[in-house]
Image (cartoon, rainbow, N blue to C red; front, side):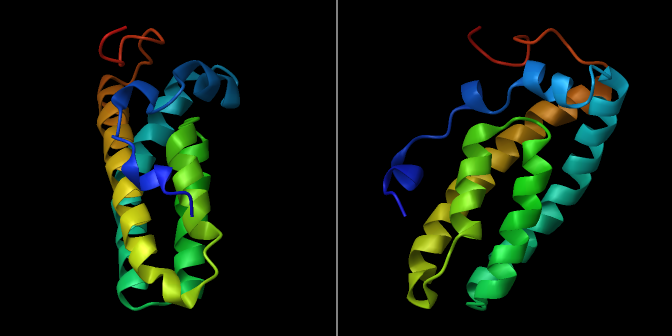
Amino acid sequence: FAEQSTAEPVSVENAWDIELALSRVGGDQALLADLAKIFCEQSPKLLSAIETSIAEKNLPALKRGAHSIRSAISTFAAQRASDIAAELEESSRPEGFDQYRETFSTLKALVEELQSDLQKLSASNDVPAANSLVPGR
């Protein structure tokens, strides 16, 4: 694993790409808001499954959980979170669980940032202007 994935500070600025996410659902704002709501409901369960697999040192379960959350994240074009999930999905060393814990911590922080943005979206049931969810833009 690249050391940079756990050393970089988590930034809301790159949490997700609303324009790309909208294009992935054919521009359907209501659908994107519905998917955001589902993600916010399901992602804590997915994170919990990954955390449990790391605690139990269960490599196949870790890969499954990471794949599931990566698939969910991809809808929202959250590239950094997707990349971190891919690192966990590609885990292959049983002796690497200490590193997997660190990588998971980064993933969890990124998913929580994404959840925060998506909760605003699903609560309004309308997709705001592309840059209005990103502080400082």
